[in-house]
Amino acid sequence: PQRWDYWMRTHEAGRVLNEPIPRIAFTSQPENSAGHKEFNKWVDIVERNGRGWSSLGDLLDWLVFGLGMGTELPKSFDDALHEQLYRSVNLQPLLEAPSDYIGAWIAAHKGEWNPSGFFPTPHEVCEMMTVMQIGDNDARAAKVCDPAVGTGRMLLHASNYSLRLYGNDIDRTVLNGCKINGALYAPWLVRPFPEAYFA
Image 1 (cartoon, rainbow, N blue to C red):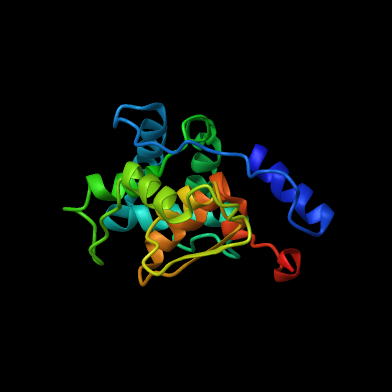
Image 2 (cartoon, one colour):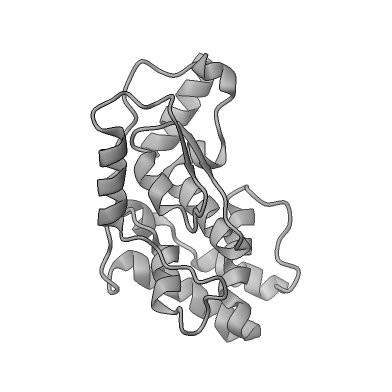
């Protein structure tokens, strides 16, 4: 909520605010954490409804739509599955302990699903690389680009320093994971500020 408030106040001001970015401490959460259990529950709901191997991609499509970053619900979902997910998805455990739960799920299940060879960089390494690159500088206007963004871990850590985040990837599923992580933790990743704000 603090991050979206900061994003909104920046838009209202029409410029970069004269205050630091609200920091988030991203960490690797244990597999038995509330956030992991919650995300696993969502995947299980989709799998139980006959989605099989495509359950992760379908779930991420549904979440992208639900978070306002997509224009269509997955066509393969019937009304009963939409309603079950709508009634079951609780973002609070993910917001209370910020982490890349989607990337962790993919890494844990890579034997079952990982067509593009996705291997997430550990959060601690992402944080170290970000600090080494940015240091103590005011980098709010600095552009940060990750050309193999995956689920966005590097940009999540960079979001503590920069308001101009960019990324690419060849895998639509992990890009959807990046969009979801941006919506949860770094709004300027998915709803970028106009360039005029940095003039």
